[in-house]
Length: 130
Ligand SMILES: [Zn+2]
Image (tube, rainbow, N blue to C red):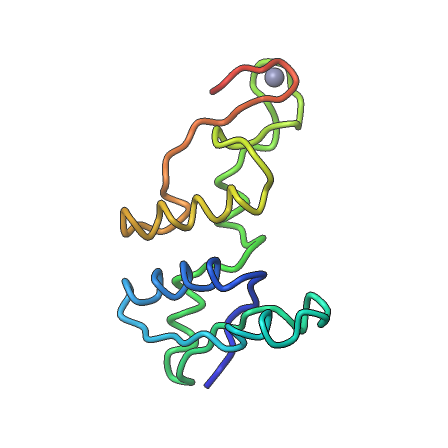
């Protein structure tokens, strides 16, 4: 068993589990109920871990494309084409974490890698979409 990631809650972790299942990889959630038995733990104590079999590790990592990888960076333009502002976000507004969850959910639903999900970008400076 190898741990492929830590997630803030079991909902997020189960989305990842679903993504892996689509790719034919069986993953299990560890620590899923720790929030209920150990509410005083630190964030890292309470993180939900997702684990896969040793032989599935490389495939699982490929499916998930680690955060901050070139692929993930390439999906988000660095600056607004209209005003040059770097205050650019995906069309789905809201806290970063939720946007990531939404993207993951979309990717699971459409069975495509997160980077391939199409979305509009939104500039917070000039409020234009592109
Ligand atoms: Zn702009």
